[in-house]
Length: 124
Image (cartoon, rainbow, N blue to C red):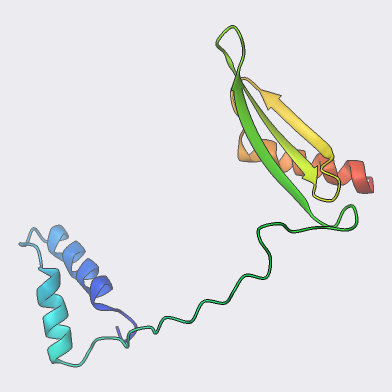
């Protein structure tokens, strides 16, 4: 267990004690024992933060360089919800493909939207 920190060791011990119906282990005691036997890992030093190079806008000059997908939901006048998911070209914000459903959308729906976008832009 050389790469286990005291929290992970405590979690393993706690799980073992629960399975064997033994009293719980105190996390402070685990820390103290590991410290006394020089078993603690070195603390990570915080790396200096690098200044961002852009202000949240990622401009794309040509079409089909970057796509994104997003979704939203809105309520109709009759109170029902409609959920939509779509794929956009980040250059001109054109909606390449989309799907809408009153029941929501799954990961398969998102995959299908992206595959349809690929077929529309590049052929099958």
